[in-house]
Length: 152
Length: 260
Image (cartoon, rainbow over all chains, first blue to last red; front, side):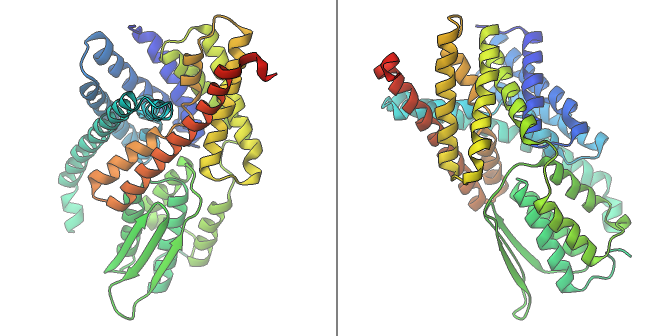
């Protein structure tokens, strides 16, 4: 089933804001976290369901897009990037996959269970890679921009 | 007054409290290590070694007659507000106005401070998150409302039983069981609800997706021990919530209405 993009934006916006509140994020960052989470999910839905990329690639690219917005807003709003990142990746992270895999294993269909768990593992790896990739680009930029200050 | 002329012991004291506050608020281990190291270096306290896992902070220097402190962290929650405040503190260290004792009191107060959202708001947020996810994964409007109720009730049960201090395993199993029970009731009330979509939405506040991803990030950053413990924690939580859910669902499939 293919989801509409506007629809996904609204739902993931809601879910991300709620999760930011669950994680006790500062009140003025709630809306921004919501937008960031929604951006990640919309990119993911577009790649995965409309263009039919595979799960690893769509997760990776969606996370890179999201982490880019995260780092930018971290600089604009003077917050650590984690404050936006942790709620922002919520729509993408494979928590559901882990739960479903464990459920299959409990119900004794080991093949399906391990299959789902390993897919969850590769998805999580894709997300982690995407975050690291964007973060290291920003770190390199920052170091090369502030080198004079460090050596002073 | 400011934090300018700290001696070695005072520096390590404040660094330890900073680390404790950060780790208890669910910051990544690399951030905790980085904060402690930067604080020490800023106060001319070099050669400090710090080792952080999700359950312990070890802080000491390399000299044989140096200080060394260990702090055991027993309970962790996620509180991004505090992570943000500590980050502010680190960035504005030069403009910080409190002296050593006041700073210690300030951060020790953070350990017991109430989080910005109270339990009522957390329950509503949990319901909203569940509803949003059931919509994202293709549920209809009935599923949306049912998932809101389910997520709300599950978090309410957790908060009500929180006073008994259950271990994390039982906490999640209970959440799973209450999700399954409420989802079954919702399906009995309205025929247009699909059980799968409700459950899929309502488990989202409890499944350890972020913990798992953070574990993999720790691996990639080279923090093997904390990566291991976070991944293990994630697998444990996923198992416990699946056990709680499967228990109630299978009881329902086996006996159905005879349970009454």
